[in-house]
Image (tube, rainbow, N blue to C red; front, side):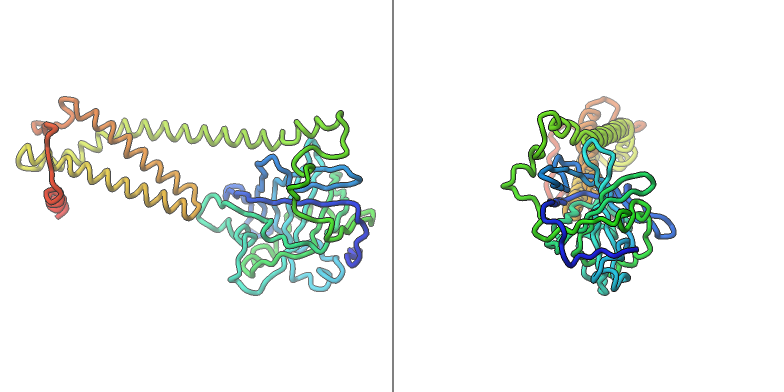
Amino acid sequence: MPNFDISTPNNYENRLVYNFPKVNINKNEIITNSDKTQMEMTFFNGTPDPNIIYTVDGTNVVYKHKKAYFNQLIHNNITGLTNDTPNDYGELILEHSAPGSGTPIYVCFLLEYNSSPDNENDIDKMIGFSGQTAHIHAGIELNDFITPQSGCISYESTKDNVNSTVFVFTTPIPINSVSKNIIKNCTSAEGKFFAYPESGIYLVLPTTSISLPDPDQIYINCNPTGESLDTVPNYLYPVDSDGGAEQDARSAMFTMHLFAVFMMISVGVVAFVPGIYQMTILQVALQARTDGDRAKTLIVLGQFVVFLFVVIFLGLFITGLVGEDEWLTIIGSTFLYITAAGTWLLYIKKKEKDFLKIGDNSITLTGDESIGFIERFSILVNLFA
């Protein structure tokens, strides 16, 4: 297989603008296998902004990433870089799609292995996330680790009758030894494209042609340049049609799931909370000697349970926010809802004649029970002593 010569750029007209802002990764969308040859994940861009803008002959083509693959080194044929020490590198491949086109592009980043297991960046976190307990990892921002590139190789590949464009960034991103051990045997991306163009024609863009978006350049965020009025609508409307439809479907499904869970919890509160209250708090309160003591015990014990649930809510909610764990935050919010809904339901049920009654024993709440702090503490100590 021939080598890429990157010593001298051979194209100064084309321009590549990249932008990889923060992306959330869902653990359920990471695909691995038992023989450790596969490591890929959904890497969906839910924003209207493209990730790649490639300018050829004054015309911009925009692409948005949708999937990420980790692989052992594919491009082991870059002279003076990977061909000398191929065992020192792996690759991150981001699959992109153009609006209204079935032709994919693959943006390849060389990953340089580091012997230390301690240095960890977002790429390492991305690789190791499948082994974590969290369900969603927020904030993978590749822009922070794509240093100014010395150049970029671009070529066309046709494999299994699928045409694709491949970009290879030539400045490696360091990853630690833990990440190396995970991806060094991965091969699942190798069937996507060839490591060298069949035609032998490739471009090497200089560092001056590769950059992040310039906010002063209107074409970055607006209409593609070099397009007529007949072709611009194809960018204005279908640009985000696939990604937008997928995003809308996910949002709708997530909303439906939350509503279903909300309904089940609400039904559970109505069906079980009154019975649980009678079998626990009311049962304990009825063991007091006088009706006045029973009423005070009922109130203090009920308030203690509410306080306990609020503490659980705050603990889960704050831990979820600090650790960026969405599920802990949701569970904490659920505890708050159960506490509020259960308290409101019991307030109504207590007005029913026989609710605070078990057999011949009952408790009468007059509404004027006053309980001091010391008396509350004494009641709780006697209950748990």
